[in-house]
Length: 448
Ligand code: ADP
Ligand code: MG
Image (cartoon, rainbow, N blue to C red; front, side, top):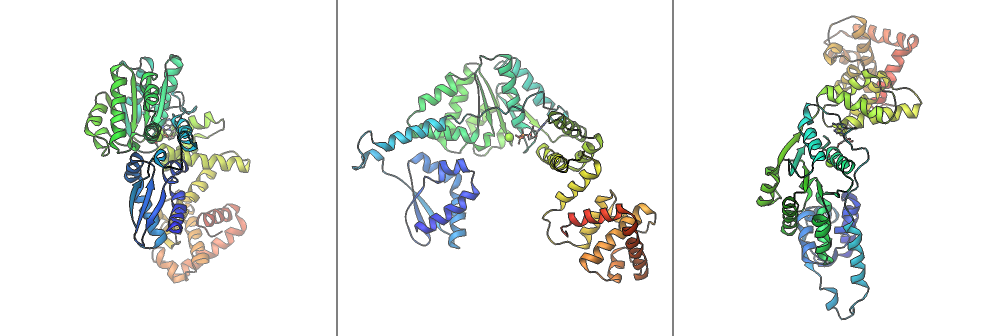
């Protein structure tokens, strides 16, 4: 049973953030069990409830993956240490617990230096959040209290939250700004309860705090105790005229885990959403990022990346990072050609078996054409060369016969295919751009 648990623990370690793992999983002890059921010991009821609410599915999955059949779990709360005869009053264990508690209570987040309003590009997608944030920074607690910001992953919620924190500190350094994630808030409350130190926590979150920033409130535990604590924290701050700003991936009403009274509290102020940026805003975000990091980003490259990455800003930044890292590594300036090749490569990575369709799509992307043009009847150079390139790759790497290739390319005869391939072989010898294109595309497809 111990081995089963140890092995499952190994899996869990890879599946859960290290800090969370140490705080909530490493403390679990397997007590007894059968093949299909395991009793797990945890230090107290709050921990039991938190683990049950948040990790029981993950634990069961890991046990299933280890035992290769479902294993049920029960939690049992350990006897309090000071009732055990072997440990006398003032013995080592409670002291260690108090120390752990003190460390964990400092989990208040640092504001990221880079997340300022200066670095935040404003577009239609985030204009409301931006102007509310600026207004709050000028006079916290006066209007829009609380400000509730919601939006999808990677759209700038944390950035704007930290920007508000920086701006308030800049305008009024005496104000104490506390920033905490929903998950850390949960940990802080749990630790304080275990260490019987709720008063200290309440002082730091209510009495000594002028502005409370809560990031990703959706990660606050569903535990009643934590929710009640959050509710009273909001009330206390609100009644004292102190500012609260919250971010979440959904609007308050959609947050299933939160209690109704907490949700209605969150709806008192302004609820504003951040949407995905439009293309023009995406271009400006990229240019600003290059400016901050002090490298040259040609406008055409910013436009190209912005047209390809229409999802989150985080994804857009990732694409730019890949290009700038490549340029730095190769000691070359960033060019459109380079951006195209790198973008193609990452779009194609890990997509499984290469089909003729995928070859045509990749060639089309490389030359900025439609796949239909490559298959179709047009005969001018701008499409015929890419077409020969696609034919050549399909012949050499997918080992298709000439008639097979003819069928893929709009029912061309095998002699037409043959003459196209001969032209291609000649061009590879005489025009380096064609050889380079084939090499890049093959690399993208994972043939090299
Ligand atoms: P979220 O918290 O919504 O998941 P983040 O605030 O972490 O997203 O933003 C993801 C990345 O995108 C960060 O690097 C952030 O600086 C950047 N970003 C998002 N929106 C903007 C914007 N309007 N201007 C500049 N950078 C932005
Ligand atoms: Mg965030």
